[in-house]
Length: 604
Ligand code: M6R
Image 1 (cartoon, protein in one colour):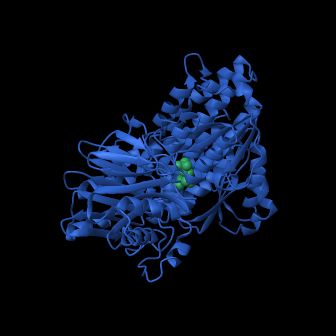
Image 2 (cartoon, helix red, strand yellow; image 1 turned 45 degrees about the vertical axis):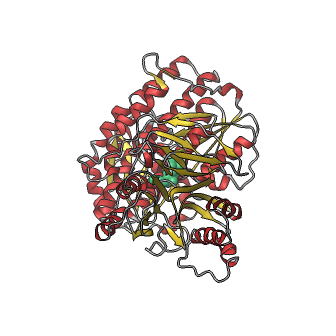
Image 3 (cartoon, helix red, strand yellow; image 1 turned 90 degrees about the horizontal axis):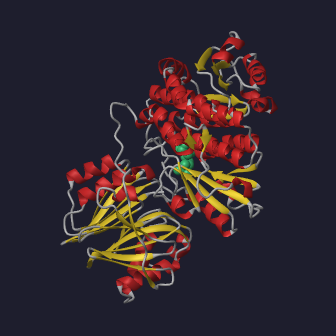
């Protein structure tokens, strides 16, 4: 994770670097720092915590220059304090780094006599470059020589006192782009970081390294050969999102969902002809299996999609967590379609899984929100979800857009595999088209859910139960609650609880049961009875028909609008999002930037 940015130019850089860091804060907010070279050598300012803390430090001790690098950190090696904050210095060298240097201990031991100031894996890079300079290597050779010694993943920005207009940079396993300006050059972890500076980017390829100066970018490949990489013009969509009148980005993003799901649908469903558009490049008749790989919330969207693709299109689906899939040596047939699901399009494990499948000759698709991301660029087919920038670390609108896109693609797969009657297609397309309105109605439950959340916020743990397509929504409900309220929660298949976890149910344990009225409703309600009779406090999320059939078994009932069961997971999601949000607000946590997390997980 971590975000990096650099500027080499004609005018002062500090304010612009700090602005870039704010755009990168989604990649981590444990600490931040900047380093510049000015007439008095290499200087830096660093602070523990969020970028605001760095701004306060800079207010007290201003710092500026025409060349600088900056970093926002998600800690991997070393506690998140100021000492471990980047940039790291040694001698003439300043380094910012995103990734993990796996052989850093071995490298430290290869430098006898060097004193290390930090617990980080990164600091050794500054030492290695300084060591090479001391051995008489040119800055370019010292940088290249150092890169050859590193194992792991990295994107670097390096400045060297005495080389006052060049930034050395490199990427392997972590993304990095060079930005081209008017007599200025930039580097950044992504297009977002550089959006205020330029829309003209060069994405470095795996193993590339470069030297940028105000008028020039020299790029080299892993072998040191000079290479040219294509320039990309980024168009639109990178404005910094504003919170508007909402208290948190998360709440704003929850409320945006009627619109964002509508935008997703516009891309995949033809509302006049009531049919799903087959995304360009996808021919489902030639695949005999789909492999969906993702992490976190995106993974749960894949688990729901398994039900859709298998039930509707009669095609087998494997869904796996990316960090498990990539090291499992999975058996993959060439007739598989691989779908990576990722809001950011940068998640390291998901990206590695995509590359693994590409190396096996499988057709790859990336369902992403950020269309300038590495996954969107590297997959054979990029499938947008069009949810717009998602700032809250807890994913909300991206999840419902992932679900909407996957449901629509499953419908198109069903059609192309001729597994559907026109009547069924019309019914399902209609259900999808009505989803934005149903979400809007579900949002009206907000005041009631806020009250229920007040009670929930007093609990130490909670269970979420569901059956069928509601199981992954139960997982997602538990994840949302955990990540922003810090209350321990578990999502379970309702029928599985009695195989062990039911032992944890005590008087008053909150159990959130997801049971819209579908073919599994009665079975879920039986499971509800099992926990209710053991003292659980039931919060039932059902729909209008379900509410009429349940009587008074639940302590609280959240009644979402009735829908076709095909799209019910999208609607029950709204309730679990609001429940987690209000619980966290009652507890006073940092809802948009919860502790220990980062929006984009770019280390494995
Ligand atoms: O950017 P991605 O969708 O690949 O991110 C995957 C997960 O890191 C992400 O969904 C995470 O679980 C969220 N914090 C959940 O709210």
